[in-house]
Amino acid sequence: MRAPGISMLLSWVATLSQLTSSGAHKGRIVGGQEAKPHSYPFMVSIQYHGEHICGGSLIRPQWVLTAAHCEVFKEPTVFQVVLGVHSLITPESTQQVFGILRAVPYPLFNAQADINDIQLLKLNGSALLTDSVKTARLPQWNTLVLPGTQCWICGWGDIPGQEDPTTVLMEAEVVVTAQPACNSSWRGSINQDMVCTSGAEKGRLQGFCGGDSGGPLICHGRLLGVVSFSSRTCGDPRYPDVYTRVSTFMAWIHDVLQHY
Ligand SMILES: *[C@@H]1O[C@H](CO)[C@@H](O)[C@H](O)[C@H]1NC(C)=O
Ligand SMILES: *[C@@H]1O[C@H](CO)[C@@H](O)[C@H](O)[C@H]1NC(C)=O
Image (cartoon, helix red, strand yellow):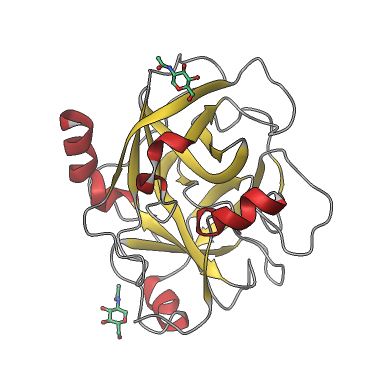
């Protein structure tokens, strides 16, 4: 069971119909800054008819890791994955566009409880690795990340009330929260397969927001988490942001990479 009414779906996929009629509101990570272009060369934009809906990370030339609640698996062929992006609206020679051959959500993904929120996407071709397109470093199996560790998140997600359509990749520094504290904030709905973070600067709204879903949590240069859910008020310090812990799923990831 999860705390009533406070978690929000971070992907735009849930509102596909709205999205096509009104266009997605693009914004940015809460309390962050523009990332240095291509400083997260594994970062991808998952798009539906040219609109950004979720982030993801390139982990092999033909594979992207994202959140399962970015429900690409329902109709993979209508989505595209764009690599080498800094600005979503400016044509960039660094960009590479792929279709999705196959979407593999974790078999025990539970959308109601936000559990096992992880998914692999097989691209319809192999990315050309360049200075702007690289694969992310994965963690060792079952690596724990200590509370207080400083990490980075990035995304093209939303900021509520933000009028200025920021379309460049934003980043923010976050700090890993102790699991018992996170679990009590979220009233017992946090399990071992999740990682929580809070903003690095006290008293400031900081964290991820709608449209950042599926994006990376980078700690010590490795992809330790996949953006899963946060409070409705993005960056609210009372509710740490929650990620799927990548290291728990390494056996599954290797299995899918080998067999699909
Ligand atoms: C892969 O998908 C993209 C985007 O849908 C398309 O433009 C491209 O032609 C496809 N490539 C191959 C090799 O099928
Ligand atoms: C979170 O709290 C619930 C309820 O008290 C408990 O069942 C669960 O094991 C806790 N999760 C972690 C990771 O400790």
